[in-house]
Length: 103
Image (cartoon, rainbow, N blue to C red; front, side, top):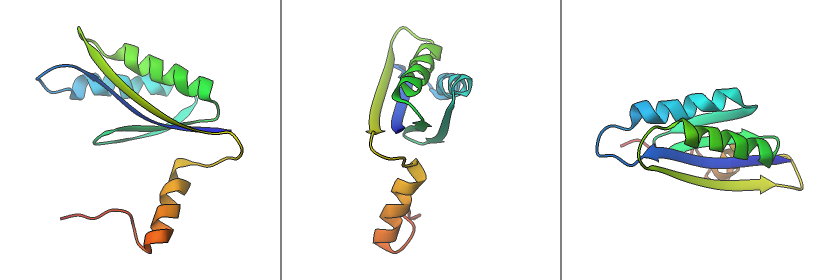
């Protein structure tokens, strides 16, 4: 089984969130997950959904603040293994090019 998620954890503040987001990302290092941070969140991969939930909870709890907003979207592949890069590869194959563009 492969569980892939998009995780976004941030304090509710008007100031820069970078330091607090860094704490959330650093908390993932204590878990058996792979991750890649992008401008809108962090994509996490785990072998089990339990490990994914534990890592997401740790990231949420690592952020300081009176109010913390967390978004978690999970794709729990139960019938076969599929890594996040394979999902991107499939889109790029359909496009016939990389799935990104810079202006």
